[in-house]
Image (cartoon, rainbow, N blue to C red; front, side):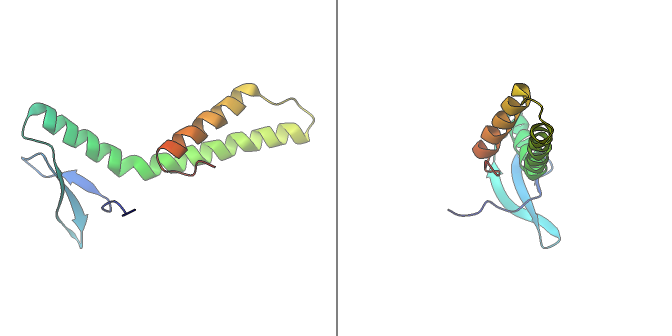
Length: 104
């Protein structure tokens, strides 16, 4: 499978074109979302999601590891497992698997 166009992306001013920054300049058109109010909103939403995707994945992975550490610590101290934390870990793992993060 091919890799996606590297980030960052932005909505080209006064258009609904989504473009990529490369070699110290903007220019490669990634998508066109139609010149309508809805198209402009879609373009802004896509750019926001794309440019923040990796940071969100990293944070979810860190939160999952933190929760797993709490569970391990409780186990080592003879405390019962926290079902709510286990559920959170499972939900985070499912989300990461769905968005291409580390769903392990």
